[in-house]
Structure formats: C-alpha cells, structure tokens
Length: 214
Image (cartoon, rainbow, N blue to C red; front, top):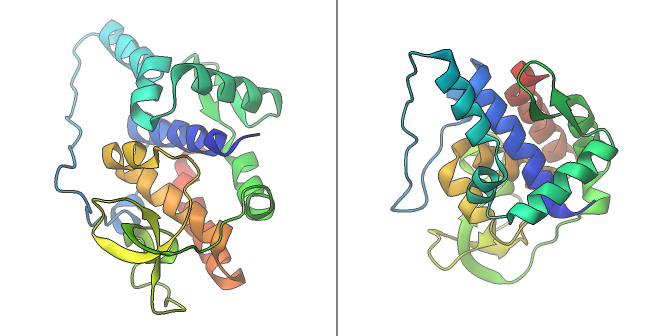
C-alpha cells in the first residue's frame, strides 16, 4: 500500500456521494472556508437521456478524470485501484460498473492502521493550508493544543502553522476541486496526527460523511 492509495479511495467515496447520494449531514460538516482565491465551483449537470447519464458517469470515473481530480498520474491511479482491489478496499459496483470504495474496510483501516502505516508529525513553521483539527471541517469543534496549527506547506496558503506532509504531494489539486476531499483528507490527518480524543472525533465525523455510501 502507498499513501496515494488513500487519496484515491477517498476520491471514489466523494464521487459516489456526489453522483448517487444525498447526505443530510454534509451541509453541517462541510462548511468550507476557501483558502484559495480561485476555487472553481462545480457546475450542475442535467440530462434528458439515460445514455448521456451513463456516459457522464463513465467519464467521471475514467483514469483521465481521476488523474485530473487527484493530481495522481493515470498509471499510478490504475496501480492504486489494482492494489486496493486485491486487498478488498475497492470493489466493482455491479449496477454501475465503476470502482467503489469498501467504506467499512476503509474506516477500519483509518481507525486502527493509518497512523502506524502513514504516520504524521509536525515540522517547521511555514505557510500553507490548514489541516487536521485546524481545518474548517473541525473548526470550533476541537481546541488546538498549541500556538501553531497544522498545515500542508503551500506558498499560496493563507494559514501559518507547523508543516504536515500530506498523503500525496499534489493534494492541493484534489482539494481545490472538491470540498469533500478537503474535509476527508483533513479528518484523515487528524487521525494520523491527533491524540485519542481528536482521532475519535475525526473518525466519527468521517463515519457520518460516509454514511450514505456504506
């Protein structure tokens, strides 16, 4: 397993939620304060013919689209999907014929494994994008334990804090296109980095966000 596999798994969850689910808790948990000046909002898409819906879904789950959405190359996305399928973290949605994250298995790994396999630690003071307990998804819900918040190092970021290495170097490409991904990755960092209370709180938030995709 590679850390980028987690990014791919989370993107699949986000896509299935976006396209096929109505999650009532999202409006409360996904209160995102954009930290870029040029965040691009997704456009609503309407279809009159079922065939066009199928084409759109197929395109959204294509290797090219996943590359664009995550910043991970098509070849690496493909390898990630193969690895995750082999260990049961990805399965094929029989009805839609697209890859789908095994959400229960992912939550189990996040709860018990990720902080050992992909641990996080605070680095030098830098400018970047707030993550973990400092991210908007957890803002006001947990008290920070120090003078500086955890951030992903990014020159154009609007927060100042202690550097946390993201799960993938191009995580900014993933989060600037998708507010769910920002929330998912920040909560995952809270599990990687936080104390038991912070980990449990973040895991509970992820369980709520993933609820309709289980």
